[in-house]
Amino acid sequence: MTVNLRAAYAPLLAVAALVGIAAAVLRVPPLWLLVWEGPLLLLLALVARWSPVRPAVVAGAMGVAAVAFWPVPLVWESGSWLEACGAAAFWALPALGAVLAGGYLRRQAGRVRQAVRDARRDQQLELARDLHDFVAHDVSAIVVQAQAARFVAAQDPGQAVRALERIETAGLSALASMDRTVHALQEAAGGPTTPVPGLDRLPELVERFEGGALDADPEAVRGLSREADTTAYRVAVEALTNVRRHAPGAAVVRVAVRRTGADIELSVVSSAGRRGAGGLLTRRRRSGTGLAGLRGRVEAAGGKLRAGADAGGGWRVCAVFPAEEHPLG
Image (tube, rainbow, N blue to C red; front, side, top):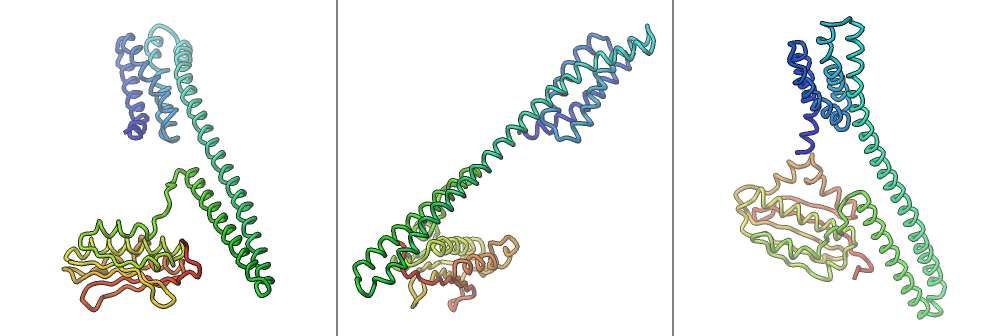
């Protein structure tokens, strides 16, 4: 509402200026013209403060002209054109003052916005430097401990185990540093700071879905990397949304997470409905959230995506990710 009102300042000033000029030409009593000058001056200040540049220049010129012109017909009758020009110049001063006042406020607001942008950029650069310092320190410690473990593993397995524990601690510290920095960057940019959901939210997601059935192996879920975990959750969301929109007649939708050999598989299978469920993933390709967009996400996480008709007449979406050697706990 505020934005729409600000966009109307320039047209409103242009109309008010034309009305004022017409009133002066038609010899409206001077008292009414003086009363009319007040709203014109206020509109001039508002236009200079809020309106886009081009409309503000056009409407502002008309407003200044209207304020300066109103005494000209009166002075012209009893004096010379020089006196009329002097009167116009005199009355143009408050109009220019209103423009300058609005322009000053506009400039100050622009400076504040620029200062906020500069401060935000400096903060982001500082966070990036901190991230580099902290992560570089932790990664260096991981490399040193890994090299030490290689040399002592055969002679003293106990030392190797302790080195692995220190590697784990350094790795967790590096992950925590990255998480804190990413969250701080998102907060500085005005974005969300909540973590990206993973398969730990899958039971809640399936429970909200009518006809949904979940079969998730906790060991398989823990075997996914962090990136694969969040990507798998996104695949499940897209597949269930696809079923809801394009296969409302599907009685059952089975969501499963299981280990298949060295891989971990997420599958979403719907029973046959009144319409095929593949339409959404095909038609939404341009938006990046259809089949091509999902495949790109899955492949970026090191997995593979398959989608197609199921033997039972429904639709099947299957994402396969490599299992982590050291699952996240």
